[in-house]
Image (cartoon, rainbow, N blue to C red; front, side):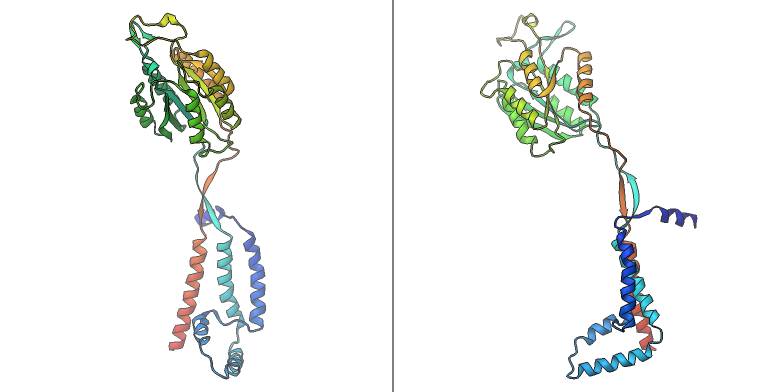
Length: 351
């Protein structure tokens, strides 16, 4: 009994006004039965069959039937009870009873992040060092991305690669092993071209994301590049400013050394140039974000912490729960009651 009481207390109604309308329905039902305007609920199939007959004196026959039925019905409250149970079940179903189910998971703490990765030819330059060993910019970019993916656990992340052209490597997803695997497969000057065109990359990101995200919940854009001798057909700062007006925020991470002092003595014939931090800084300012230099793990931690703090989602006022609908039970009860009435009428006719 205690379990039933507890279960009943957990039931709520989404449209409770249908319960109050049940009182009006019952009052109308009483008037109709009082005026003998309703057949017994068990006579529904019989009434439907009789409606198909068209006797020339059907009006007289119907009057005689009503007179005989009125004399035979000594207990009109039985008809009222039969209809009242049906109406009550239907009104309860229309009120949409439900029980509070499991709690829905909370949304991610931070906004979605889309990383634009520079894969132009200059990413082969080796101006990072690990002890006595030289490390190229692409290896450093992959290391940075693995670090960022690990720190952004719980958020959706998307990857786009760009050079002369841009393309989507991985759309927004929470599949972190896939993100790391696809990052590891990136190669300089493969598929995207030899040069770096950040303006075209930002336009591509706008085309891909503007129609798939709400204006009040745009993903964060993080551009990882050295912007080494970029193409200037489109001013990337103008595109970054336009993105910011549409609700996006652009952060930039510089890959590469900041001066010619890091130049390798043997560069394989490729003309060396340091990363263009001034352009990356102006891009971040136009896009409403900030610029960071990937020179060490400590600087990356500080950069990511700052980005996360700036891009927190607003917290929910209250927890949300799944609503388990229960309207099928009163509907099943109404159907069962109607079946019992029909079975009772059939047994009575056979006797």
